[in-house]
Length: 313
Image (cartoon, rainbow, N blue to C red; front, side):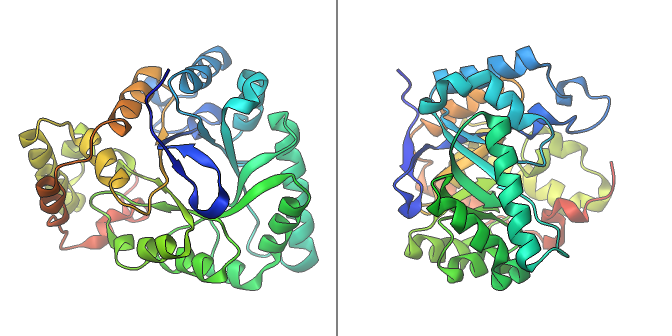
């Protein structure tokens, strides 16, 4: 039996593994073209990964309508084990689509997800890239809530960027969970968003834990225009090494140390990477002095923390 810990997803009553498997790499050719280990695996390899995840206790599976064939691959690979995992997906609604059209769009997309996944329920359905305007307008949420009341969705979430959108979702009151970008260098959410979510008993799922590879050995290859980020990652690397840890391990254990966090996403198509990350989640908390030292790392140019501001590869 796996010792991977679980955590309640806010007020939902749903218990999720502290590590969630992100599946964008299973449905799309994701990552840098030409880097073979970042290409989409074949279906047999994807099925092996998904079944391995469940076998080691990674029982929170994250996908989306926008992830190509990922939903259908999940349905074919582990649909027969549906009772063993918590399933999250996402529905994207174009900004120009509002009112009754938006509600109908969400209804159709949920039905497509259910069909592709081969299930009659999705445990957590997010609005994909929810904005402050969308949250305030309310039509997307209304359709998600309608699906919840119909039993097709158990909980409603908002996958967001920045600080304003997750705060809007928390203040809205109807969203059960937020998915946010959060890591040991990009700690902006620690000031207001994470405490507000904790106070409202809203689940929080972290993505971008490794900051698109900047919190791995690859930080050394960041270009000169990202020199501030490269130096900050180097400082984190040195602190982790002094504690006998790799930088990715320190990154995951830092994020999971926050009391507001329910789970952290790992996006990988490799079973060994998933197993390693699951092991970190089962480790003891990081020492308080290391947490404090990591929190002292700052960037003079915080814009470098957003991959949207990075130069094209």
